[in-house]
Image 1 (cartoon, rainbow, N blue to C red):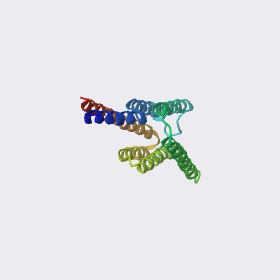
Image 2 (image 1 turned 135 degrees about the vertical axis):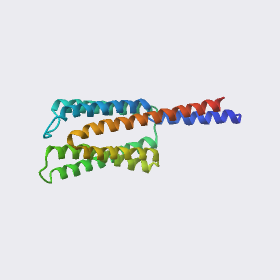
Image 3 (image 1 turned 30 degrees about the vertical axis):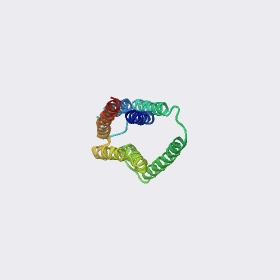
Image 4 (image 1 turned 120 degrees about the vertical axis):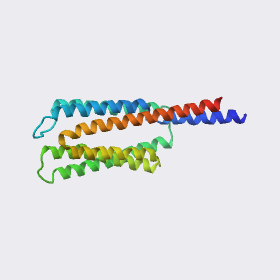
Length: 211
């Protein structure tokens, strides 16, 4: 095999492997951005005139959780599609990681519940604790998982999530929905743009080698 042909096949194999195993396609981030903006925005429209804050209505919460479930479904679909035909130790490792992450998040929720039940607080405190505390916990768990795999660019993405949640907590029980919605939407759109650029660069590199 000629060196050029060998190099082309190697680059093509690497590119195919990255595309096959990377379920974080730009469209997944775009869907997540829209879901974040609409879901949090609907609740914000529901609570923005509450003085004092009493909490979202059941209708707005129903829409919120339906959209969140739709977001989760898109991730599961993209992951299943990317892993089609893939087997071996890597699959088992990722399943074990999912179990561990679920356990850690469960512990975080138990701690949050314990804090919420430690004294008498207004509704705004409980909603801020569970919403912003959950986002910070998710960011921390995902950052730990990515750090184990030395995926530092993804670790860097978790910091803005925690920062957005912290700013939302400062914004209060009404404003936190808007801050989280807009902040996460902007972050996810930036992430989608970065993923699209990376994929274009990979395709361009492959074409150059092929030429």
